[in-house]
Length: 327
Picture 1 (cartoon, rainbow, N blue to C red):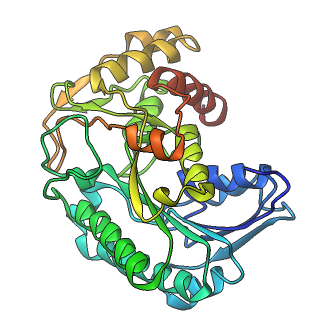
Picture 2 (picture 1 turned 90 degrees about the vertical axis):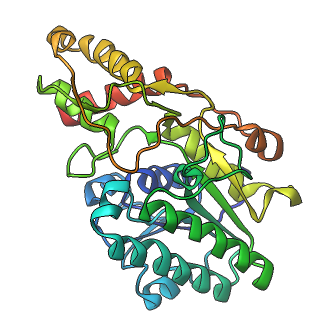
């Protein structure tokens, strides 16, 4: 991105894990950043280093409230829409709230962005959209039927974005995130992601529980790869790049057993006793897909995407961050 060009960027869900990393990155890149968050899953401590930054503005509001959306997009160049209720189990337990936030809230943001004539709307899509599709690697134009209420909401986002592109001329790009991890990801709560949850358990000498036999595999994607994709999606001048979706991943898969092995190895460098913590195996989780692996050819060819962090590279960074910030 040209350092000489300063943009005004709205990041919804900017107090969350991915959102707060995006806020920090674009502030460091010399842009003005507005964060819209209702702190239902985001945290103020994720923003502590930037709250007083002269180019940062926090709007405490809810995407389910159209007035908050309209206020937040005023004079904005780009929207990076991260706000959502994640988690497949959460959506199974409470499909109504998941739909309200992820569908109604998404539509509010699209309408507000259209009316404000923003340059481009980049949004967090999800690998859950592939549903029961069996093929590997996952290719953007081949999807199956959704396996959870959450997956339905994220697919509806893509459909709405496409309609707004075709009907209103709003430039949209969806980024189908694959198992993102890294600094600031919350290890606490009923719906904590597997990596920070396992890290915290290992640090307390507690046995993490793997759903199933540990041979399910995922395309684990470090946060800095995701930041790169958001920036490329925002700034690409390639006419082919817009009004479509991209896998946002590393393009490799590791089993949960592999993951646990790496975590123990890297954490044991800080505390050798962690190497002796046993792992417990439980039942498979409802709505989980067995294997996930992204083709990143489309992002490479059209956006120039070049992910720098493999699972092992990212885990070393993440473990170091957790040890120094959460121990």
